[in-house]
Amino acid sequence: MSARRGVLAAGTFCVDFNKSIARWPEQDTANEILEINRQGGGSGFNMAIDLKRLDPDFPVEAMGVVGDDELGRFLIGECDAHGVERDRLLALAGGATSSVDAFNARDSGRRTHFYHQGVGALMTPERFDFSSTRARILHLGLPGSHAAMDRPWRGEANGWAAVLRTARAAGLLTNLELQTLSAVRLAELGRPCLPHLDFLIVNDFEIGALAGRETRAAGGATDIGAVKQAVVDALGLGAMRWAVAHFPEGAVAAGRDGTQLALGSVAIPASAIAGANGAGDAFAAGMIYGLHEDWPIADCLRLAHSSAAASMRAVSTTEGVAPAGECLALAEKWGFRPLAA
Image 1: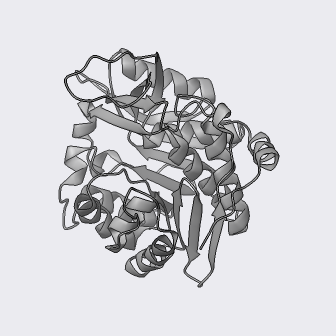
Image 2 (image 1 turned 135 degrees about the horizontal axis):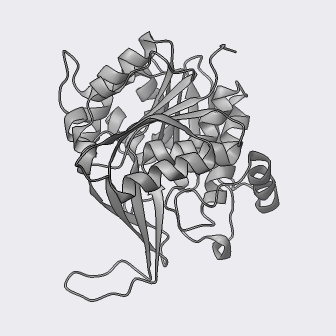
């Protein structure tokens, strides 16, 4: 294993206002919000906190921008409370911290996000300095959420590709988190990044967008066979050691050495589910933790699914995640779903 240790969680740091509703409403109607919960959010924050909840002794660093406002101070305080090194999390004067209204529909378990960029729109590749980090892996996101990063940058198609290239040159392994935009926009932002990645952990729609392949059937059900092919296709477009795609029923992983593996998700009882917001982040945290520790890919997938299931016990993005042993014990108690081909 490299002398480097830990994860640098970089990119989006925002405050989530998680709001539970009975069902997604029609337009022009009045609807009750059943519960409001304020938590830190964003790909950088969620990865950082999830990793510290999986293993409090695991070294995690934060890198990104917040405003010098109450929400920014909240995020900095949360990093301090969880032991995340946040010297590289910069508070920009005079700006508003990025925020998200995340609506969780209890009848379907689905979530819908409305976000305000705030100072996130000002984040550029120049704010990513890897000269002093001790981390082994960079986890970066989210393309589509930061105006300056989404634009071309000094010969690269966008700032994300520029940051990933710089990180690898500095000796870091790299992983990119995406969000569910249109397939065209995902491909436009994500494909230029693939040659600069060591790992790619995304959902079924996102892997399909990158590969140019439809991975969801009519009605939104995942076409597992198409996902398996899309993961292989994505590997061929980039430099990744591993590409992983997750979906409600399970996950598929493919390695550059030809290894392919699929594993069903944890059969969490419906009565234990409070919300799905953050489950994808928790899955990625479990995968990244296992990959960092050089675990067999099957063990990485088991922890990823276990962490995702544990996270669904809470409405917030991170509060349901528990120490790795506890997550795995929950998975053993509930079992793993069989995954059809």
